[in-house]
Length: 98
Image (cartoon, rainbow, N blue to C red; front, side, top):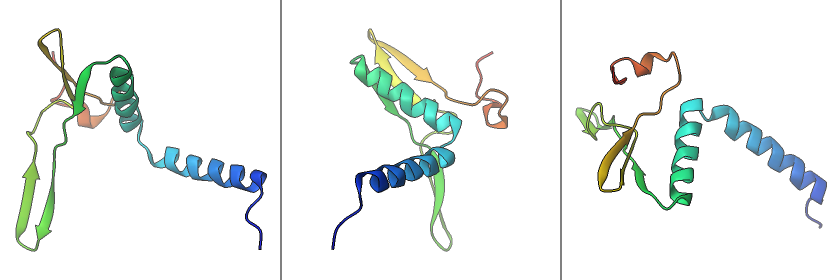
């Protein structure tokens, strides 16, 4: 029994990549590529996770700080916070610095 041919493997890989990209939001893509770029530049940055979930019936757990930036880091001894949102997004309300 033989495995898939190279062209079959490439086609499958292309279909998988298309599915992943379709489900990856624009903001998430920008966030991920921004972190990759900062790491390549040798900068110290990390993603700040915030959110909530229901652990058990009756148990609701929140984590992170509401309003915290998506990406936190330090450049030249100074705090840097980056908020990643899509232009015109309702999520950006209250997160923009005016």
